[in-house]
Each structure stands twice: as C-alpha cells, then as structure tokens.
Image (cartoon, rainbow over all chains, first blue to last red; front, side, top):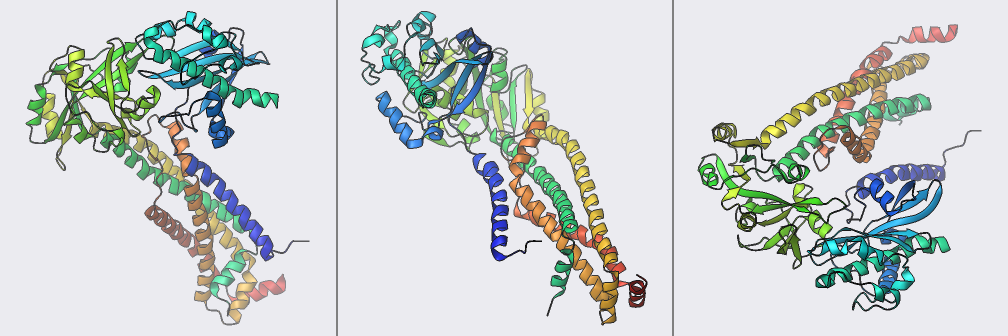
Length: 221
Length: 397
C-alpha cells in the first residue's frame, strides 16, 4: 500500500532534504576559507623517518590539534603540565600537529612528532622519535636560527635526550630553567645561546606532554 | 476555482518518476551552465586581483635576473643581476609613469634549515615609495620602518609565523650574522609577499656591498594610460628586461579561453540534451492525455487555453530544474573550484567560481527561455487536437 504524504511525513522529508543541502554547504563554504595556524612537519618525511627510525619500513601521517582533541579544557591541562601558558600569536589552540606513526612491516613501533617553539632569533622546530612507551629514541632540531645553531643541532647534544621520558621532564621548570633528576644532566653546548637552549628544552617538554595527551593516554584507556 | 497552474502541476505529478528525471536533466544542465559562467567571471576577477596585488603593472630588471622571490629561491639565491639606481629617475620622467619603486633582492644560505640547509630571501625596499604601490597591505602588528638605513624588518604573515616572530622580536640574517628588529607583521595577502622579509633598501645595499645597485624597478602606470608606448620606450634601454603584467594576464587569459570554449560547448550540448528531454516528456504527456484534451475542448476549452496549459507544464519543469541546478551550483561552487584548480596549470588565488545574483538571474532566464522554446511544439500540437478525433480514439480504444 502506498504511503500517503501526511504533514508530518512532509516535514521529515523536508528536514532530510534541508540536511542534505546544508551539510555540503557547511563543508565547502565554511570550512574552506579558514586559514589554519602553522604546523610542524618533517621537510622530507621519507628521508627523515628512515634516519630517525632506521628499523622503520613505512609510516602513516595523522593530523590533530588541541582544539580537536579536547578544546579549552585540554589546553588548560597542557599548560598546567607544562608549567607555562601558551603565548604569542602562534602558540594557539588551533595549531595543527602532525604525528608520524612508524611501522615495521605491519607492526607499529613508535612515533615521530614535532613542535614549533619561539627561539631568540626565529622559530625552532624540535622533533622527537618516541617508542611505544613514550621514551625518546632520537632528538632532532629541524630548524633553528642562531649563530650557535650548529652546536645545538649537533648529534652530541641530541644524544643527551635519548632514553628520557615525560616523567624525567616533570622536574624541569620551563620558566626558570631549573632542572632536577635526569634533565639536570643535559648540558648546554652553547652557553652564549642560553635562551635557545631553554627554548629547546621547553619544546621537548611540550612535545612529550602533547604526545601523552594525543596518543599515550588514549592507548592506556 | 482551480487555476491553470494547479492543473499543470497536478498533470506533471501524475507521472512522478518521469517528471523528476526531466527536472534532474534540466538541473544538471543548469548546474554546468552556472558553474561555467561563474568560472568565466571568477577566473578573470581572481587573475586581475592577483596581478593588481603585485602593486605595479611593469617591472624592469637587469637582463637574466629572476623577477620574483620563488624563482630566486629555486635557483638557490644565485643568478641575481644588478642595475644602477640612477635608472629609477630616468624611468620616473616618462609621462606615462605614475610611481616607481626600487627593489633589491638578496639571498643568503642558511645551513640550519633542515638537513641540507636552505635559502633565506630578503627584499630591500624604500619605505617611502614601496608602501604606496602595495596599498592593499594591512598590518597585523606594527607598521613600516621609517628609516632607509635602519636595521629593522617587516615580515610577511607566513614568514613571521614560521619564524614565530612578533613586533619587537629580533631576527638574524644567516651567513651575515646581522640582527634586525621586527617592526611590522603583515596580514595574509595570499601572494608571495606572505613569505617575504622586507628590510630597508639602503641597509640591504650596505650589507651586500651593492651601493646604489638594485635588482628591480616596480612601475605603476597612470590610470587609463596605455602601457604599450611606454613598454616600447623601455625596451630601448640597454641590458634590462621588461615584464609587463598586463601581457602576463593576457597570455594566461588566451590559454584559458581555449579551455573555456571547449567546456562551454559541452555545457551547450548538455542544455540541448535537456531541451530534447523536455520536449519528449511534454509530448509523451500530451499523447497520453489525447482523449482528456479532446474532452476539455468539447466542454469549451479553446486551442489557446490548451496551448497555455501545456506551456505552463514546460515552465514548471524548467523553473524547478533551473532552480535546483542553481542551488546545486551554489552549494558545490567550492568543490568545482577545487576540481578546476586540480586540472588547471595555473590558478590564481581567491575564488575561481564566482556566482552572483546577476548570474543566477541570467541563467534562470536562459533556462526558462530555452524551456519555453522547447514547449512550443508540444503545446501547439496539443492545441490542435480535434475533439472528435480524440473521442473516436477513445471509442475504438
């Protein structure tokens, strides 16, 4: 038997049609023109992933942001854990973060994640290669503008971070630069660039906190 | 009393599927038509805006010198050629010239960008004449440097974002190890200026030991003046190359026009197919209602009434199809934009498909016009049905 078009049916059909029209409208009109904040990507992911994770065979790229993962509440949590506010024009809630999930054949073996950090003369990009427990396997400053950049980008400096976890950075105060425990042993190879050295450490702590919120806490749940 | 419109509307919905399919056909044709016409006006507008955003219509540079930052970067900052600053006053004297501005491009190698280093580019500009050319520049923070010799910088939006700089911060010119104070950060413009660091001309000349030398002269021509005679004169200058942005625009428009003609032909074919669909639908409907029309005539309907009734059906079909098509085009304009961008070799910034009220009305008028023409024959045929013949067919049927 054919169903009669009653007023309530007509309303439902109208609603469905309106939704069908509205959804693409919002996708293409409202989402499109928005300018996103700048993220932190590897310049040459194929080459860099292989270098930072020699045992990797492939990787997958995931994009996320604090806004997407938990909004203001997460922002406040991250700031509290960091011991500092996110500040300036560029450290904002909508900054996109790129997480590289690293695989050995089909088995996930770790992550690579980078953050931007304001340095004395320019942006610093600090990447960490982490194992599945959040332990640093490699430390890499992709970009830094400083007369002493070569010393801070040297592998010798980066080696001091290997094996450290977020717990080790709990004792590092990003505001005063005071360190305790394992972070106390990290030596600044360029005392003239103390500001950039501290910026690198703040970026590392921020990176580990974000990875804990974005990835590891999800895994534990 | 039931109106002609109501009768026509009810008639159409006696065969729902057929009517809906016809409307879909018309909708698809009008979608293509609106999108194409929208692209036609959007592309030209976006291209003009991009070229106007350069701030000048003509550029003079030493022969072989790259004329924009991207090329300079790709070449690793090499290949820069210089000309004497005195050329500026010569060009400014030409009657067609409104304003001129000198530019010095410079590049340094930054070993601390990525694994193998990268090139950082700087534009040395005159704070008096350059901002007059780029009137669309808006500052997010701060403003232009005032002194030609100052160690100050204005950063494009993306350059500032990458370097995490704000007004008052310092930047360091790699290789030279010279510090600049950031005094201004520009709003996003969607042009190459977003990635540029501007410093005072004389400061850059001093750093690179290029006193009184520049790489580029930007020329703004007086409004309404033909640039061709000026270009001819400038071509006579020794060892310089002239880049006319009007020519660039013309060349791109020519390239695009071939593609536009092809796509417009496809749209016309789509409209013809829809037209045939309309004729077929209405004609079939007339034949199916042969007896009914005959009866209408027996009870007093005049051929004109039948003609108008059938024509009204065509009008409803075209109006519905045209409206749906236009709505589709409006909703999917951004998708169309993305699709066009993926196939075009060069697409300017800004919306490529611009659909405004005027375009919507013109398209709707075209669709209705074509629909009404398509409805002429079926309506005329229906109007000529003889009552006796219709009744006889019913009896024999």
